[in-house]
Length: 340
Image (cartoon, rainbow, N blue to C red; front, side, top):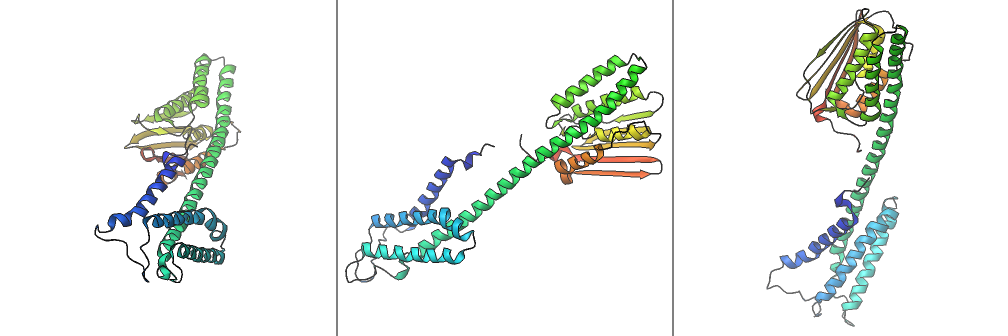
């Protein structure tokens, strides 16, 4: 996956340079024009501007030594004692180095002992926070990428499981029509061809809701031809929002199940303000003879949970001799769980 522009190395380097420039120039900008460098105790000459730049460079090195070496090696491995000890030794060493560079013989320290303490602690604290936050964000990105890959694999497998179940039912329809030498065989084969084209080439990723409904209507027509005269099938087609999209083959398992077990079926769908309302009702009747295991409903439940989470509701219940399925999906607020 390509990194966003703000995480590219060049942009990160420019951001670091800008932050350091502000960090070191801000005291100069805030200083009153008439104010000059303070004379250190003991009559020392003022510390030169170039020496300040020299100490600033050391603080930059301390920052990156802290973020790239000390935090990963000591702090993240819970070796806090060694982490603190290393910084104390480094602070004392730098203090002695600066004292030797600007001190005069017999004059001792060029300033109070806290000469480097505050800027050193500020840089160390900033580096520690920067590294910990960066590590946390990197872990979160890695977790999301793993989750996305897992979802993509699982959704593909679930879709592959739905397709054979559907094809078993449709092929049974074709066999039945062929045995009857029905004139409906040819238009049925044409419809089957369009269904196969949808499944193989169009049902990759989200599809327009109208396409999914057309697929559903073709399936219902094929089943009507098979059970003509022996099964009552009514379809209530409401208005559909043409701008909405849906994950493919989510609705067909409910219709398959109704044709497998029912003798009277009522199917309805509509959209209102981005909310898809879909229902299937069927009365219990004699089995159609389809012995295929009912894997569809289990898979569609899993797909709905993965793709829509709390943006959907699925209610399945039995009342007397009737089986009811009510599905609501808020398609207008659907956010894809993975990038394609």
